[in-house]
Length: 447
Image (cartoon, rainbow, N blue to C red):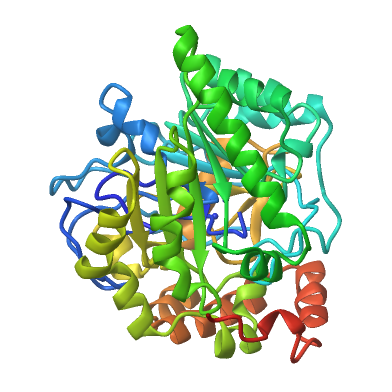
């Protein structure tokens, strides 16, 4: 999945992910810890690993406006008042504000070399559900029919997906801004060059400032060394391309904040960020209680409590992190509460509506929560988007999400939503994950 006022887009639904970035605070911007019922301003979906900082949007023409029609604007997609439908009998939606999402997050595979304790998609622990290259292009074309401004490719590990660059080229050639989230495990020079050619921003997941913390959270020894080598390579390629006057490579670091790494935030800013001169952004995203992070044991031991969330997103913490980081690096923090999809906020169109696509082309009813509304390979994309809007007004959804007022009540709501909307396969997977009552990744790592 962190904050930049009016511009964080991709992750905390992109790398362990923090896939969707929430309400972000950036140095120099108004700060605070908004929480699900605040502020009045419309916030963009943030991909911070389900999608990153998307810092590069500042350099796009009208970039900030493209990501968030903010400044008090009330324009944007309005949720449908029609009931939820599971079959394909509805009429096509009319063109206009409900024609499609501004942001799409596509988990291109559930295959992954890592086993993150907080993984939102449970990648590396389930079938990849990865499409063939031709079918991926069909999904890309379906997405283009909705006219999104941004598409974030995530996973799993998207850089192991055959055809990922062809998909990026298809979307980017049509004017879509592209982001990708990676663990850095498979990075090499050839990949770094291709990333620069095809993506507007590359977000690298780093969840610890030391090997001990990062490797434990990410579930694989040596992952810290791999990601640091990947960042060094991206930095080198970015510098070479800048000197040669070639298309620039923009990259940032995304950290999913849990209790195990909460004490290392200043180390990221004071040490890690200084190692890479071409680094553009450093985003700290409070973990979303989704997927493995919704497990009761994880919530008790690793999910930030409300006081920690307030501290993470507060003005004092942000100012300190910005002071420690290089002046060239934009620093963000976020609580990710915009991903709750609070009904009252939805009714006021405060938050950008996002479409989340699973690897096989099925579309989530609501990002973060289990349950799909159909496949982009089988039905018109506009029809599926209409169903996602309808789900937001489903009575069960309104009742459940209206109860969210803290991290723990959000986790409870996620569990209820998943059991209500999840498929038979989803429920079996959830039952299997609940068997692990005290897994080793919850060991105290605070320094």
